[in-house]
Image 1 (cartoon, rainbow, N blue to C red):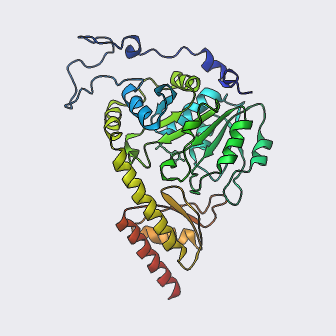
Image 2 (cartoon, protein in one colour):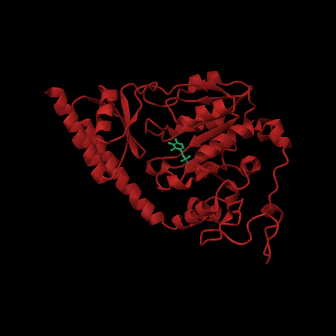
Image 3 (tube, rainbow, N blue to C red):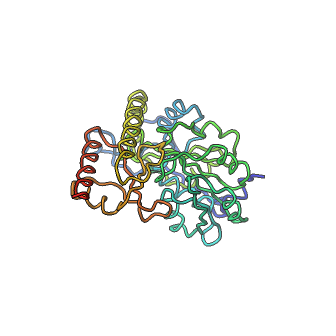
Length: 353
Ligand SMILES: *Cc1c(COP(=O)(O)O)cnc(C)c1O
């Protein structure tokens, strides 16, 4: 049985969280002399001299409407990367607990585990980039606190089979994180609607990809109210700055515009995948549910270096396990994609001469 109390680190359970000035008084007042702000103002036209809302209620209210879940199920981080780190600090005892990851996958799970001194157990994806459930189960022991899944997965681009994810959720009594950074580009639907069914589920999403707001740094974790409460205890009080909160509230009104961009990006992704499939030394273009494609091609490293001389930067993944000779290509603008394809044709011409 899942028991959250058994998963939370002892020191976090006992932690008396920092109580900010805004926690102790959040009502209306004429004169705020409680937070040692600069009462004269700021060098900007806005009132950035005041601390931001530590609970980000305006942002959460709008996200709650868009996602169709209560604000009490939402945790906000300074990028999903902060959510990842905070999950480690809530649940994993350094030098004692372990986590399971399924490489090739997003690199921050491993880095964050290492920063927090948590043992990493690896169940590599199968050749079709799906979960190896048997291997995963064999790695589990009483100290396995979190299983990290990424769907659609980075850098492979595919979604994980829904029934496999459900199998993990149903059989693992620790926390199951599903990183859905690319969910807006996918055919599969999000697990956000399944929170009521799985008390061990944490879904990560971000405004950095489909929403086009990587520079603002806003990551979201959706989970049970009790998991969100633990994460709130651990986060820095003012982790989402005032300008990000204001701009995100504005941006979240533009769902229509974002949906238009997603549609264009998905169409361009499918078109670019076809173009690459027809190129001579391309061994495989992996099916993608994200805003990038993974291409297996002879001399990947050489091509990467050649494209750099043309001012085009891809992500070379050829040293990554199961991604040998693979390049990860983010979908650009129409013009950028054309520049890439033209440069690839130049590369092939150079090879045959
Ligand atoms: C890009 C990416 C993130 C990072 O999100 P931020 O919110 O910008 O920190 C998280 N997970 C995956 C799988 C990503 O590819």
